[in-house]
Length: 336
Ligand code: GDP
Image (cartoon, rainbow, N blue to C red; front, side, top):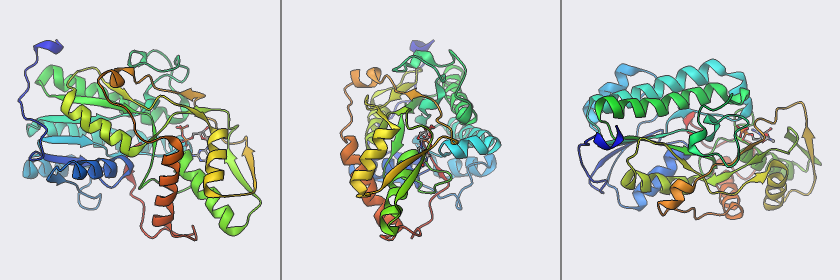
C-alpha cells in the first residue's frame, strides 16, 4: 500500500506557507524559533483566543482562508502526571477534537504535508526498553495518562488512514519527555523538570530547609530539550514521508532522584529533598528506541546539563527573579 501512493509535490522551502498549531507552547514555540532561524518566511500561528482548535467550523474556516502548505500539529491539551490523572475527560475530548479538526481540515484544503506530534506514553506501561515503534498496542497503557495516550494513538491512526484512503502525506513523530523555554511551571499541571526548577528556586529564595518531590524518585525518564525536537521535526518534514510513525528521543535516561540532584545543584538550593510516596510514580521507565531517526542522519545537540541551565534561565526570565508570580500567563495549549 505505502509504495503505491502518489503525493502532490512541493518542497519544504522558505517560500512555503507553514502553520504551526500550538505555536505558543513548549514544542510549537521551539518549532517557530527553528523555522525562523532557518529562514522560513511565511509562518502562520494563532493563539487560543484567536482560534479555538476544539471548534471544527472555525478550524476549517482558518484553513480555507490561509491554505497552509505544511502543518505542524504541536497543539494539544498537555500536562504532567497529576493533571493527566485528574482530568481524564478533558484530556481525551480536547485532544481528539483538536487533532481531528486539524488533520481533517488539512486534508479538505489540500495541505501538502502534515506532521502530527504524539508522545512516548502511547507505548504499553511495561513495554520492553528501549521502546521500538513496533511495540504500539502490544499491552495495557499506564493508567495515569491513558486518556492522553489513547487520543495520541488515534492521531497516529488518523494520519495513516488519511494516507491510505486519500493519499495524504501525513506523518507522525513520537517525542520523548521534553522541556525548555515556554514550559508550564504550574506545580499542579506541569511535568517533572519545570516543577523541580520552580520548587528548588522558590525554596532557595525563601530559605526553606526542604523540598518535597513526588513518588519514590525511582522511575527513569528520557528528557530532551525542545529545540532538539524542533530540529528533528524540520528534518523529518523535509526528509521523511512514510506511513510508519517515528520515535524522536536522545537515547539517554536518568532517574528522577538523580534529576532532582542535578536541578538542586544548578539552581543552588542547599537544603534537603523529601520524597512524598503518596504521589504516583507513573510508568517505571520510558526510553524510546530512536534508532530509525538516528539512521536517517539526525542527532540531538543539547546535553541535559546545558538544557537544564537554559531552562532555568527561561524560568528566571518568564517568572521573575523572586519566583513568585509569572510575568506572562502560560498557554494552556501546548504539546508534550
Ligand atoms: P510522566 O512522565 O507522564 O510520569 O509525568 P511527569 O513528568 O509529571 O512525572 C515524571 C516523574 O517525576 C513521576 O514519577 C513523578 O512522580 C515524578 N515527580 C517528582 N516530583 C515531581 C513534581 O514535583 N511534579 C511532577 N509533575 N512530577 C514529579
